[in-house]
Image (cartoon, rainbow, N blue to C red; front, side, top):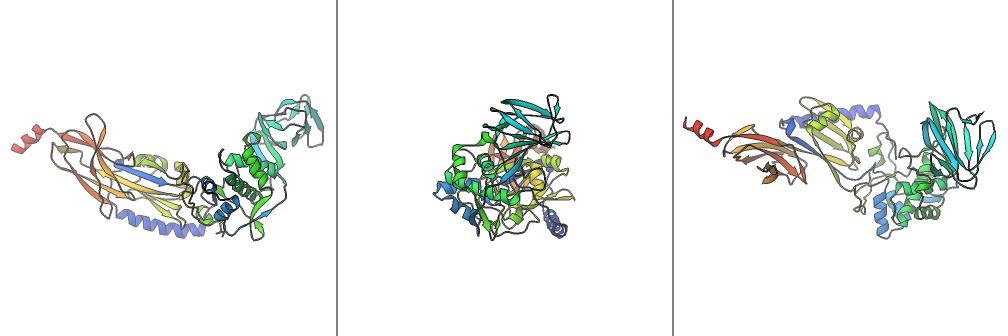
Length: 461
C-alpha cells in the first residue's frame, strides 16, 4: 500500500562503498563453484512492507482476547486514540479510459462545468472523451449525482458522486464520498472475511488514520483505489461485520503529539515488524513505527516462505553470472542491500530492487547457498570425491539418481566452518548427484562411469 522512499545520495555513496568492499573480500574467500551446480535458496517471512500493524498478527491478538485498542497500542507505541470529524474524500477509480458506463437503478443527475443539469432516467449511459449525451456536448468535468439508489461505474456500485474528467486519450473517473463510507469499502478490501471484530476495528482506526495523514489534495483526487494508497472495493466489498467495525470506531484516529499518524500496515510482518527507516530509506525514524514483536501471526500462510533459484535463473534476471549472493540486513532484521558476486564482478542492489525483480513477498529474507562439484567421469566402483560449499543452511543431504530415474539419499552433508565439504561416493554406473534440503533440490551433477572391464584392462596394462 505504500510507495517506497529513496536513499539520499550522500548515504548511498558511503554505505555502498563499505558494502561493496566487504562483499568483495567475502567473495575472495569462497571456492570457485561451477555455476551450473549452484542453488540459491531465499528464505523469507511475512508479506508486505512489515511496517506498523501486521494484519494477521492483529487477528491473532483478537483470537487471544485482546481488544482493538490493545492491538493498536502494541503496533503503534506511544500513540493515543482521538477523534476527527467526517469529511469528503476523492478516490480515482479509472484513469485514461477510452469509454466508461455510468448509471443507477433510480433516476440520477448530470451536472457539467457550466452548471447545466440533465435529469436522467434509471439505466446506464456510455461516455467517451467527447462527453456527449445524444446531440448535446457536455463540458467537463462532468459530475454524476445519485438519486435514491447508488451510482454504478461499469457495473460496479459506489456510494457518493462520480466525476468524469478528460485526461490523456480518455477519461478519468473520481469517486467523491464521506470518509466513513470510504472506509466501509476499505476495511473488507484490506482484510479477509470471517475475522474477529477486534481485528476489523483495529484496521478501521489504522486505515482512517492513514487516510487522514496521507491525503493529497493538490490534484484531482486524494487516493488511488489500489495498494498505492489503500485498496477500495466500492459497495461490492462491504460486509455487515466490517461496516459494524467502521461504525463502532467512527471518527477514531491514532495521534502522536498533536498530529494524526500515517498508520502503516500490511498483511504479515513475519514474526517482527520493521522500523520505518529500515524499509523506506530516507524516511526519519518515528517512535510509533519501530520494530516490535509479532507474537500471534503464526496462523498466517505467509509466516514462512522460500524461493529456490538456480545460478542460470539469477543470471537471466540480473545480467550477471552469479557465483554468490550476500545480503546486508538492517537493525530490525529486514534486508537492506544485496550484493551479487560473479567471476571478478559484482553488482550492488537495494533490497527493494532485488525483491521487486524476483517478486519476493517481503524484505525479511536471507539467501542460502548450496554448491556441488564433481568429476565428469569416474572408474567403475572407484572412490570419487564430490566437493561443495554451503552457507546459511543445515540439514543438507546428498542424493543420487537411481536406475529408475528417482533419487535416493546417500549421505548427510557436514560442512566445515568455512562452508566447504567433501563427500566420497563409489558410482557403478552413469549417474548424477545433487544436494537437497527442505524438499528443495539443487541442479544435478552428472558423472559418467567407465565400464569395469575397461578399468580392469587399463590396470593390467
